[in-house]
Image 1 (cartoon, rainbow, N blue to C red):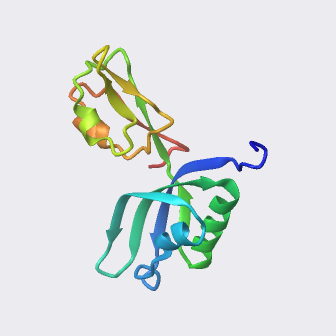
Image 2 (cartoon, rainbow, N blue to C red):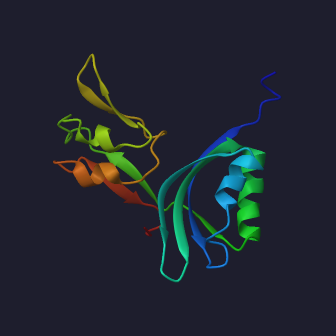
Amino acid sequence: MQAAQEKKLRKVVYLTFPPESSNKPVVCDLARVYGLDFSILKAQITPRHEGQMTLELSGPAEAFEAGLAYLRDQGIGVAPAAQRISRDDACCIHCGMCTALCPTRALSLNITTRFVEFDDEACSACGMCTKVCPVAAMDVLLENGVM
């Protein structure tokens, strides 16, 4: 049975929409047609109807690739997120401020130890934690030198 199960992927992607695509339900099609789960981490439409969206996608590898090909066929630019988050454990004072803003619950307070735990696999690299950390224990790491 496990051989029949496909490998699931989870990635954060950055989408750019031309004006002619910004009013189409293409992200919903990723769920409806391709069976992908999505979370919109950030979205913006300019006055000229161009759009940018940071999206966390997850699903079977084959559906994932088909969904990304669909987006590209619609004229939408698709790029991997160019950042990830790291934590300096020695600097963290475990105040818990970051846990309140973490949309994926990658940061959580362990009730038993009273320490903030960070699951970098669950992190979507939205950067919210870096903005509220009073001691700058959370940091954005750029990949390939771009943000």
